[in-house]
Amino acid sequence: MTDTVLTNVDGRPLSKRGLDTRRRLLDAAERVFGDLGYHEASVVKLAEVAGVAAGTFYLYFDSKKAVFDELVRDLNRRVRRAMKQGSSQGTTRVESELLGFDAYFRFTAEHPALYRIIRQAEFVSPEMLRYHYDRLSRGYIEALRAAVDSGEIGELDPEVAAYALMGMGELIGMRWILWGDRGPLPGAVIDELRRIIGCVLEAPGA
Image (cartoon, rainbow, N blue to C red):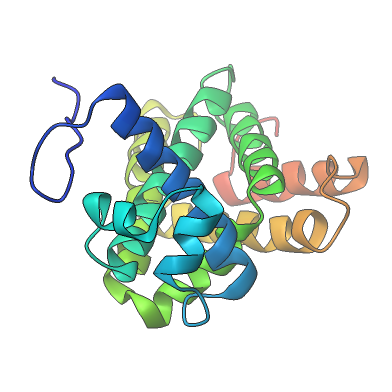
């Protein structure tokens, strides 16, 4: 498997400097779309926050929507990587779930704009909204299916369970991270989360 080669709008591979500039533009997009919203944001503002000329923006993205779509992909890749790294440390499926949730909550505490950007996608770029949840769920469904097949959890529908748990995690993160102080979840919330996950997965001893 080869790494994806990032290019400019003309299809030329980016140099290290080009990659750094592209990263700055995506970080600026996260901040501007999160603070102002898609419709109030402008290419001029994005370039200003990134510290580049407006003309430089168009070397990397051909429109405001193009950078929005790439930002959704970028945040999606990063949150999935964080969750995979967290859940991989678990020795049981329930423990893996909790560690994956913890990684998600920490990521959203560091990137609170994720919530607003994904919600904007429903109206700005519906295909990216679907992309985000499809990609989040894909590996999750496979992991739950493997746990069902091994007998570690009950005979559940992996796709239904994955989306139910994803929805729970998103709303708990909204309530205690986004609307809270962005610190660690209270112990009582973690305990209740563990209990609910155990019930949903029908995991023995949970």
